[in-house]
Amino acid sequence: KIESLEISGIDYEKNTVADIKQKITTDLELVFINNKNQILSDTEIVGTGSKIQVKENGQVLREYKIVIYGDVNGDGKINSVDLLVLQRHILEIEEIEDIYKKSANIRKDGKKPTSVDLLLIQRHILGLQIIEQ
Image (cartoon, rainbow, N blue to C red; front, side, top):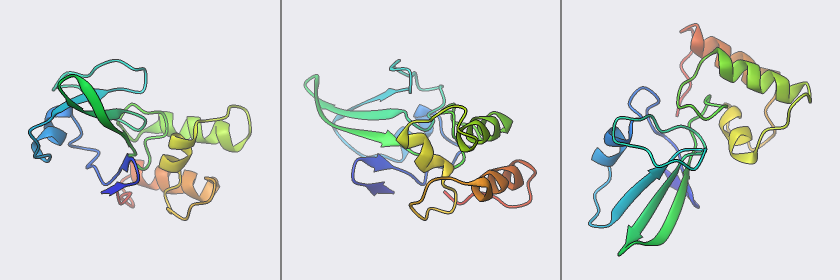
């Protein structure tokens, strides 16, 4: 799902560079960069905050940011680390960037993430309610 310059709807269990490349048909070059600005190989996981650069003749034509709902720390997984990062944000201990706020907003209502979103991530981790991408 592409909206503006953000891509969402990626299956968080099939989010390696190779998995995503299989779903994109283009003659242009695709470069995947993680949230630490490192180029990813085909076997590496793409997480929230990662970018897909579309290039032609070495020139970047467009850059898309990845959003995986529930992946609040950008590692491409939904786990207890995401709970901790979101909890620290809600308690105003540590501010997170806008792209991570968006991934933490599980309800997708455009508002800032709250304890309800924290609960939804927890339910996902426990296998009680899967987060819809």
